[in-house]
Image (cartoon, rainbow, N blue to C red):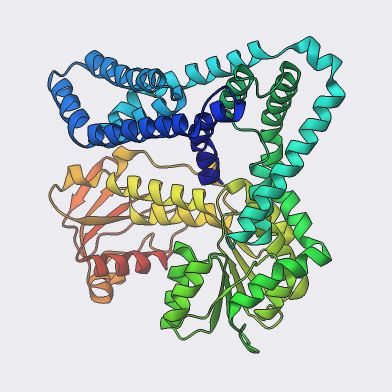
Length: 514
């Protein structure tokens, strides 16, 4: 969708060149050819500048270590290129595009972007202010019916053309509807064409005002249309006839769905999570099938012998072909929240005994998915946060069991307990300060632990795990190299060393006494 929008904007350039010949003001094909030649020369010069001249210029500017000079140079390059193209009869828009192309080819492109980014909002604001100044409010009030008809025609035609183009390129029906709705607005560069067309006499003032008003209305509608695009596309494709039409391509590309699998895993989505899971299941010889909407991925993985099929997991028919009624487990690992909810609802209704595991992006979606029938929901942002705080606390040498207990408590309380977790203060067990330059692990004896009143000899830690207890901290005092008859108390922090395998074994051993 983004690519189509960019291509639409780029099409303004050749259309601007054809306005003189369309207006019939004496322009000939020869003159248009000359304009095209000028455009080719300018673009060629731009590409050469981007390759040879501008990088050297920016290098010299950067070597001065003057941020102000760098910003000024970037702005002059942008404005100068735009003015140059305008002087040759081309559009300022083309010049701005070429200026961006020039800068993007230098090694200082990222810094240039960071420096000019604050100007973006200001220029966008000025653009829409200028559009508002061109509008005639009284005219809109007098011709609201004409404008409403124009908005409807623009919206319907652009949705149909966008949908058709997407379908012809091989996209699924639901994605095509989503793309069509996303392309329904009139692009900003259309104003440039409209102004040029009015100046050349191609459109009347009345038509220009209707077009301008209609365009602004479609732009105002865009945020609401995009928000509704996913549920609308899902609803449309769920209709019986359209569902059959949408399934035709999936069936043709599936190259035969799995035959009567049983007790298998269905993976919906073949991103990083899906790939890793499929690899593990394959090595463990657990039967599985994969549903993926990217036809290129399906073809590539089929060549490698993977049981992957093209299809939309939110379709009941497709899930049945995957054996949803005979599967043991369903894993949903896609980014589309609407489709995820629909898949969970369908799967639960078709197989009440199915175990449904869902990966979602946000914590806020957990309760809704569980209400629809998901057995376990793993929020991506929350698991990331757990991994981050675990590693941060580990770097500050918190006892491993404290970290593990927090993680377990948070997960067991459905990801709602983080705000209730009380952390011991760092200075209680900053073990790197006690014994520097040694890799050690710690375990904090909690209230009610069966380790209380036992001594080191009774636990036989070294014999059972291979790890060696090197110190015990009790309150502010550290007992180094404790004797075998040293008795543990509640709140003690036991420090032990060994290789990673032995330290992990010791942690697990201590946790048995909780």
